[in-house]
Image 1 (cartoon, rainbow, N blue to C red):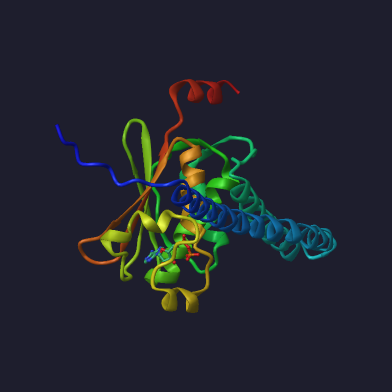
Image 2 (spheres, protein in one colour):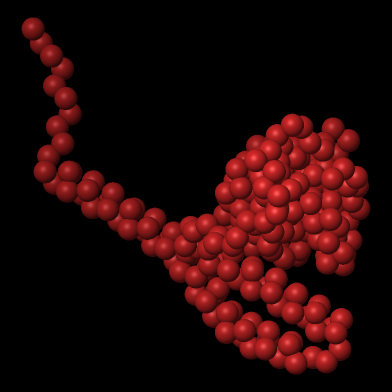
Length: 247
Ligand code: ADP
């Protein structure tokens, strides 16, 4: 019986298809590695001036100024390290510590100057890498201040998890883009974002850090307007609690 012949693709078509495909692949690879290299180079080049600043900061005689300068330099070093870690796709090597969440958030609030409101009553213990998580929370709270006009930070918990809630009264994020904003370098409405500064890395770094702790970062638009960011972290386990009580 008669079978419709398949359209024939000759060797020359195969060759040009292969060439086109290879070119596309090369361009994509170059695009991704260029971005990664840029980040790695930037991170690397910022390290030595920061080390120099750190040495000078330690020479400041007045206690409060010295401590504050050192803290700022250390924070920048953390950011540089986070950028490098991000560029390399590596996780942090910072040690885990058992932290009381309320005090930890109060310290963050104190250090951020452009304050946010904080309602933290319960005493909750979490096991985390303090500087890394601080960076994650800071990125999220800074976004709420920058795009949403201010942050309201609260937390609640269930038996196993604590949820840190960061709410603002800004424009929120279009539903279709709620996941995309977590992609590296993704930013909404270029014009608005450009005048506010930023890299488009904040949320992806935050999520990477929180996920490395077995947690999650989720976004939702609030019914009353504004964005609600939920940062979920596992609470300290009973075994960890016992260990803490013994030591
Ligand atoms: P950056 O702030 O450096 O641009 P992020 O990854 O932190 O990078 O955020 C990505 C984008 O998500 C921002 O450019 C902004 O458009 C949007 N966004 C983040 N947080 C908020 C918020 N609280 N309200 C409205 N839009 C936000």
